[in-house]
Length: 438
Image 1 (cartoon, rainbow, N blue to C red):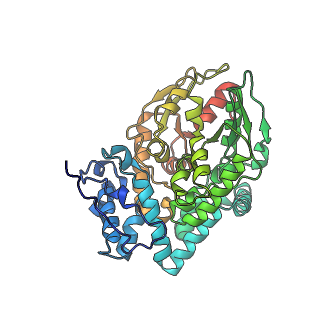
Image 2: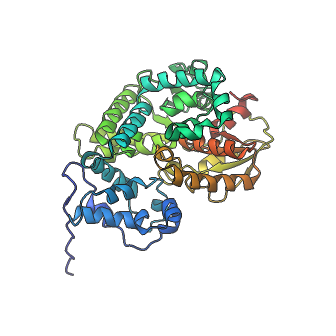
Image 3: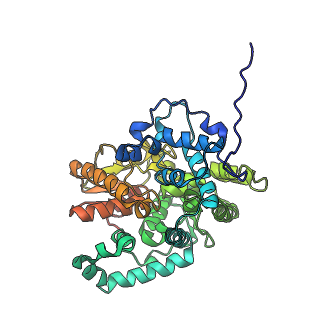
């Protein structure tokens, strides 16, 4: 039997520093199964805004046939990185890894207009810097408590502030994070199942501090000793998502070292985007001999909170919740981590809770990191579609395992005037355990 020659593709217009791996995009057989699952293709109707089209463009740049042009950068930037295409792909193309590497090339080689470049830089480096984010949320909480937010929203002035107005429209009611301060060690109740470390996250830490508190209490109730390392920072997921890979690696190294010293069995995450990135640290550090093995070991121990809790039946007495609930599958949970049934299995253990399946539950809501701030028109169309589906369920609560999705869906619910809460699965579990919400 004569072996077939292996196709060789160089970096082309990409530089030699961490280019997209040709072995990954050569797996694509151009079948088109990804097209009907791709939100941007369905909204924009352009083949180049589909996974197949984007892979073709990446390959063409790798072959040196085109450069990193305005058009190329635009098509790559319009990708949500929701990874729905990965679930649909019969060839197992790792589209997310290819897109992140490609965005790394764009970040180094392409110059956005000055105003756009400044906006992106401030946005990403605020939401990935714990000190800046703490200062920002303190000011925003004062803005809300003073009554100024209510007046401005009622005035209709937000529409005149462009992106700043759209950012304000996403704001939830910001809790006083001091009320949800967590001890460094929370003991397990009953027989101990294991020792876990909790990633606090960035947005989760300041916008949804109550979700972190509920996570600790539910894990403890189910036999896990919970460690919350004080020195933990951002995991780097947003930086990698936006193409700032080296800055993302700096953050990732610190997280790896932080939890390595905590001596835990698992690292538990309650934010889908963070968990997906942390499970791929091994890929991120594949060319870094100092961290390759450490990253692989770390990633193997990362668990979404629903994934860990669903491994065994819930412990303790769960009280009745007379609620109709529907569940939104966050892209980085269902497609990025292949976690679909576990959150549903947890919710159905709550007495009295009625789980109604959401049509297109795994279709992106338009949040996608900073996407809803960078590409508002596309994101709004996706959000409108999601809210239509939620409204049709008649649910009292829509459940999401990702803070970005929660912010986006909550905004859509406010815009429609619907009486629907947005909650994380662990919030409902805590409510059922304690008979009250945090």
